[in-house]
Length: 390
View 1 (spheres, rainbow, N blue to C red):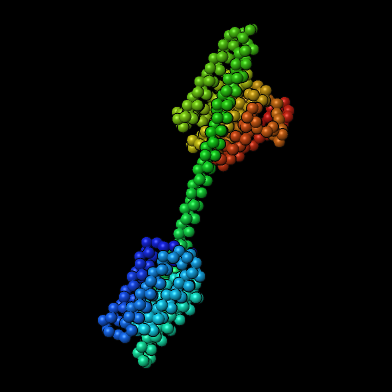
View 2: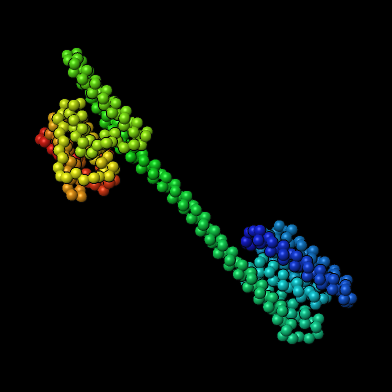
């Protein structure tokens, strides 16, 4: 009934209506007993009952009583004054004290509510004793016991309400946290998938398109003097385009790399070296050491992609004539070494990656190895002597 009171729920509305009916019933009982019992001042008792009922009924209607504790306190004072008049006229008014306890505890602050309940109980006991022309301990038990029960019920309800509100807030926070976590996981998944696709595209489509570009340039240079060589370069470019088309379709179908389908990692690396030697002016040779052990698809794909990227860098940047690719099985470890005889570079002075010029290869290879718990080592120097590349 005020801003500080808990919001009404279907249960609290039902309790409020029960309280209203209890007040009306007790006031009606006092009026009816005054008439049927032919008591003196029956008319005044009825008038006091009606006045008390009207004053009480004004509380739920007036909006200020619901919003302000001050207005609620004034309304309770008016109801209490009317009830005191009724109690002075009839001993039956003592029963109205019980619903007043609940109103006072509900609408007033904790200490003020308890003080109002104690004052109401004292007035009820005194008024009832006046009508009996005597006082005994039994007269105080009823109002005092009713006050104690009202305090226990209201405080218990308030404690349960606070606990319920606390749990509701915790549930809301948990729901919000789960929603945030789901959004974060979704974002992380999107970023991880975007990073994976970027690595795949760089190591397959981008390298393949670069190879096609080199082959077509070679064909262009050979066309006037050696048409047969130009035709061979064009045929190799067409084959590279077909391979890249297969890779693009794999992205759509989300299948394993075509170069690993139905074959081993060693066979795929040997075929890579053969293809690289056939398409470019470099001799790439494959070596296998140790006893081959089964690897997961993720490890095989990562090693194949790293080899593709490393050989592509050798073709484009190293100016090498030979490259050696060695796959070594060392017990529970596997190593992939790519060595070429081209001119080296300073690994600490690499240019920044750029969408136009590239420069993503080493970063992609490092990301692949780190994602699987491996390490990538680059040993190079700006010389013309043979050097280990990756």
